[in-house]
Image (cartoon, rainbow, N blue to C red; front, top):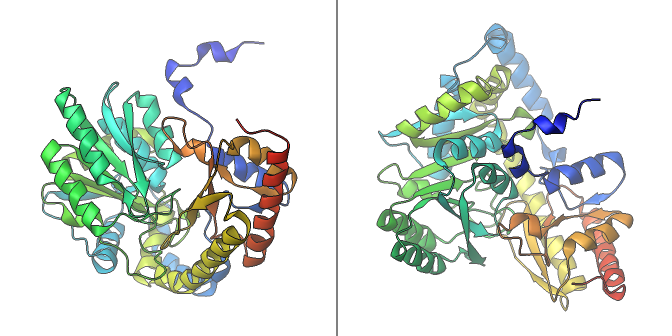
Length: 408
């Protein structure tokens, strides 16, 4: 039998299994209470209306939907997404901007990494940051620096100190990656003041901002915060979002709005990667956006998510008030729990799984391997009853873990 691994490329060693994808395998195979995934709750999705829209539209466009499409995306979808950004987020593309449709925002992470990162390039991320971004960036061998967060998101004063230090050493930052609204995994939202400060720093120190914005429309109390892209005067901000959280992850539709020259570069790479995003998915997305299916879904799901968040916060207060601290998200799907002391949540997960509860260990979200005492908790997918039961089970697992002496 041939040892195929002898033929693997050197690049392969930089790819890592996603903790979230591995947990999804577990939750599919057995009955568990999952705080692990980032799944929307589709119990409120307007299925009947969505199906009626599809029946009406696909009868007209079915032949087109079964054909190849331009790599950049179907023009009607690009126009629909431009309108969505203008109406919902107050962002209008400028004369230097263009847009490209992605096979999910995950592809956008990969394509931007391929277009921009050379080995040794400096990029900056938040601590913690989205783990799929790290997994996309690492194979390109950059030098990754991190900036910590508080309740108002990334500490831009800390960022300024880092930039000044790097500049004094003659080092230039290629780009900063950020999830500024309802952060994954931290649940934080970057304040408007800090958004302005971040953009000013990008101009002063001449780096790009890669803004990943999938959760901005899932706000519980406030209106969506204007993206950093709304401040962009020179094509410095790469804006990316997705329909996965506001319509369906199964569509695999995301998009990037950025400088035309970068979009052209991404288009070249995408031609090689997958030729184009599913034509059928694009036609479905066009109709669902035009008929405001996403607004129906958000208007019904946001009150439910808000209640689930409140339930999880109450259960954290009941069970972990002396054991740790946690973020209090204004929207989105996640919060971050930080346990006191030297608790390793990757080891704690093994105990919790035996009791039927899963979460994502926080270490996966830190570029430097720190955050071992943190965990990401999802509140959008489990029911309120599961949140109550699951948090109590998690406390029991924590006590068992502590009493077993498995901290280090």
